[in-house]
Every structure is written in structure tokens, then in C-alpha cells.
Image 1 (cartoon, rainbow, N blue to C red):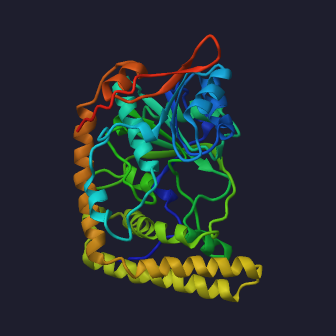
Image 2: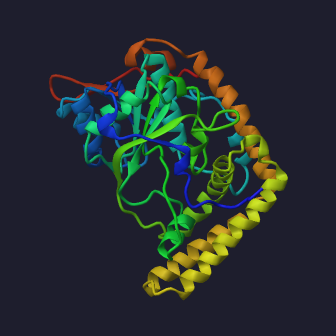
Image 3: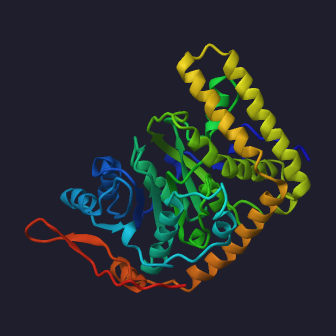
Length: 382
């Protein structure tokens, strides 16, 4: 079955020249905001240029009041939500979460929750075209967004090509650094989504954006256009990053390897995963050996080896049965989310959408320059 990790999945995408694409407006730019307001400059500039609503989903080091004020001072229509005040069960419980909740693969990140909330709000608000933009992404040519939005008439999802720091897992970063061929793919950091894809969901796992692209059997049609720049970061600064990525990276690389070979999700059985897991571990072992033998600066080399050992240690906890059960749970969740979105369709506008969900928000500045706060009714939905 040729169960191995591939160097590239770009053949799965349609590549479009921005200059040849039709133009369209964006309804909103959705930012899963985890950094200070200064990191929102790119999103604010793009929202102002495209006259799009800016939806900021704030947690960690982000402050909803500061974020909203920065956007308002630039003349941008903005809604900022403090994720700590989110009512219970705005987003439904997922079987994938339940499967991993009490084990070592449980993930505390809230990125998937933010992206799903953005889709839900967009569905109720009546938005047709949205951009997910991370707060560590730069846009060298904001006009690319209008071209990408125009392609949403043909493709449910359109990603911008990352020309900055490669957005890869620790394992893939290390492979590239020792000279192995290693490509990147489109990701949620700079991804436009059309209304027809709101019924897909982001599971709480590394590579959640790759899983978002899947339907019941295959890959949703997706295009690549324009350019985005990922800020630099050190992928080896903490071995916990590698451990946290391993299950999601294994599952995504395994599934997309099947897609590269013209196969579908139905072929991802236990036999396939047994072969793929061994191939994945061999990739990591080989990469460790090449790092050790490389001329990479010693301190960095040591960090790389420690991170890769963390990856392979976590890999040995992944079983073919777990892989099969996770993909089955993801299919259950896909149906559950589709029904949830179906029950939350509307054209209520942003204020109406938030009121319907009982989500408190910060949006409008008063005459004194302060920011007013929307109602914080704690209303759950299922």
C-alpha cells in the first residue's frame, strides 16, 4: 500500500495565479488571538483595506479590550471576544475530544475552539466568505486576499502560500535542516473559507486545519493562491511541542499520504496504520542519526535531538487501533458539527449572532474613547 510519509502534498491542491483570479469581497477576518494587540497590525490593515469585519477571539496574552481599541482607532469594524467568558457548550462536545481527554494525547490548546466558534458566528451572521488569519502571519500583498476570496466561488477553501518560516511540525523541520526534501501545505494561519465549508470542523489536535479539509471520504476541493509570511520561531525550544504534535502529525501525514496515492479514508485501516507507524518511526530515527552527524551548531543540535526523541517516544504510544478509532470519531464529529451548523444558519448580522449564542463581546467605543461591552448572558446550546 506504500504506507510512508510523503515529502509534499501540494499536488492535492489547485494552484492559481493571483493576477488571473476574479475578485470578491470578504465578510470577515477571524483571528484566533493569543498575543498582545501590537501583533494585530496585519489583520487590522487587511480588514480596513477590504472593509471586512474583524472578529478577534482572545485568550492567553491577548486582551479583548486592548485588541478592540486598537482596531477601532484604525477605523475598523471589530468584535472582540474574551474566550474565558464563553458560555458552556456554544460548541458541541466532540467524540474526538472524549477519546483523548484522559490520556497523554489530550491537548489544552484552544485554537480549534476559536476556529469553530468563528464558523458558528459566521453561519448565524450570514457571512459567505471569511479569512482565518493567525496573529503571527504577515501579508506582503493584501490584494491577494481579494483574489483568494474570488476563488471561493469555485473552491470551498483557498489557502495562501507560506513564503516565510515553514509551518511544519518539529519532525518535518528537522528533516529539512538535514537536507531531506520537505514541503509545506496550506494551513489555518492564512486560509479563506466559503460558506459551503462552514459545515466542516477543526478537531482539537495538531494539524487541525488539514482535518478541516477532509469530507467523509476525500479532500474538499482546495486552491493555493497568493502569499503569506509566517513569523520565525524556534521549533526545538521545548520538547513538549514535539510530543504534542506527534499524534496529529502522524494521523495527518498518514491520511494525506493515502490521498496522494489516490486512495481515501476507507483505506486507513489497522493494517495500513501498522505499516505507516513503523515507517514514521524510521523517518524519525533516520533524522536523529543525521542530526547527530551534522555540522549544526552543538547547542541547537542537542535541542533538535531532544525534541526528536520526544517525538519518537510519543509515537510508541500510538497504536493502529487508536488511529482507526480517532478517524471514526472524527467522522462522528463531522456529522455532529454539520447538524449543529445546519441548526444555526441565519442572516442575523454579527450582533444578532452573538445575542443568539449568548456570547459576551467587546466592540463599540463610547464618546470618551472607552470600549463598551456586549451582554454576557451565559446561555448554552447543544
